Image (cartoon, rainbow, N blue to C red; front, side, top):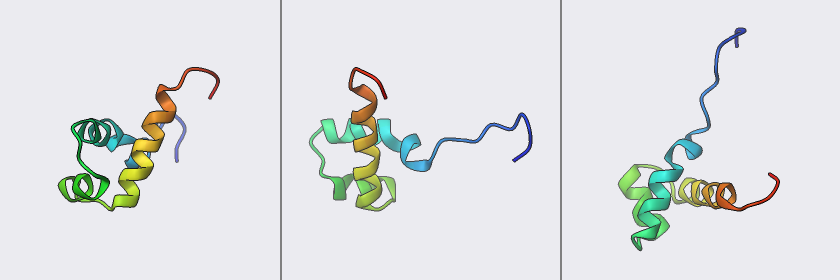
Length: 59
């Protein structure tokens, strides 16, 4: 990576808001995964990351 070049966040972080919204609608990880074209493990990781971001306190 060159100086000044910004690295994009990991894929699971980029889909986390959408995955979390679908979970809030009542969809299971497998259904969300099919809809977004990823594995259910990726969805679980994305949602876990999203929940950790919402917790107050030090990170």
